[in-house]
Image 1 (tube, rainbow, N blue to C red):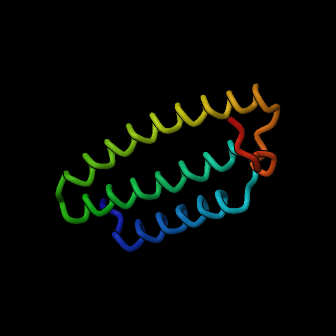
Image 2 (image 1 turned 45 degrees about the vertical axis):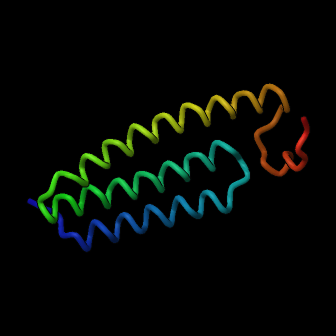
Length: 101
């Protein structure tokens, strides 16, 4: 059973908006990263849904590549968050207002 493309797009849109709200309204770096990941998952859902609708595996391959890139992005971002927590003592983005060398 294939889910209709309209429902897939609606769910992906809701996920993307939820992630965008999380990125724009939160001040904690980890919550911002979670919002970005939710948005990336919404894009992957659109790719897989459209690929299944048009019966081409290209979208699924791109979604697989997107998952690999997202995993690398999370690894690097969390390493930076740990570094900021250790060096500055906080992960609140309002406290990072100056650029120091």
